[in-house]
Length: 389
Image (cartoon, rainbow, N blue to C red; front, side):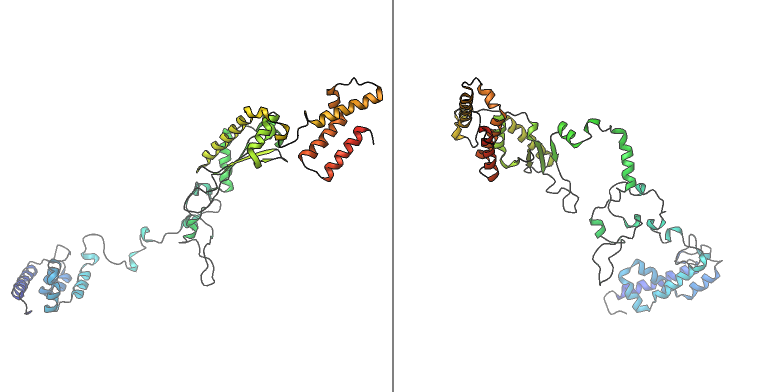
């Protein structure tokens, strides 16, 4: 029949199928799931009687022996599409033993709630809703929960920017929808019970600097990047007025030598910045360590410091200098020439206002360098000291 070695087997199978189909039709069994009482379904009986028995059993064979299905269809000219249409006609609501299958017709009533299109949450929100309850914490942007016409992205074809629906650009950047004024106010109201009143002694900035001289400066960043930590957020800056430290003249000068250009003479501020460690807390601890070490080293006196001569110093010192001795001897000589004797002590001569003015002019001239202002100040102090005004 097919011209192949399995022809005999297929012929035997077809004969068996035909005999089995005739037996099933005589017994009034239907291979499809229809009503069990066949005698009362005359329409179905007529329908199935019109379908050849070999076609019905070929459909059964199609499900049982898929490898021979195409060969049977070719040899017997079976149209499975007509068989499927016939089975759909048999599955009418009157002949069905369970819930209806197939497409819903217009006269079947409204669709089930699960099949109705869902309205977005943003369209159902009221204008006076409690927004902090909708967005209580930091979260990724949700277009269905934000009732705002937000747009973001590159406009295509010279049009408008893409809207919020399916916009991945809005999901990349952090938002502050949880930090609305209403939410911040509620947080503050809750935190008030854990706070104390501001001290009355710290009403001014000067009072704060007096009681809290140490100032620590850090910076927080909000960014969109591969890491939550900004590389510059670890930097810690410590500021302190040098007058707040208990230092004598020797310790102060030594500390200034150690800190170098970190000291601002105009504002009397010492600034220490640490950025070597990867975390902010580590840099903060390092600044505290540096300040402690600088203070302790400034108070140390090395053995070689006792042998320092005036020529070894970087600045001019008035105490014990030749200028001080010369002005003392000059004042005594003037008094002796005027009064015939001089009974004034050296301390009284040094504390004289004219001598103090001369001292300041000499120190400025030696340490700050020569300038027209310093030279004029030195000239005025000498004329006043000698009574030449």
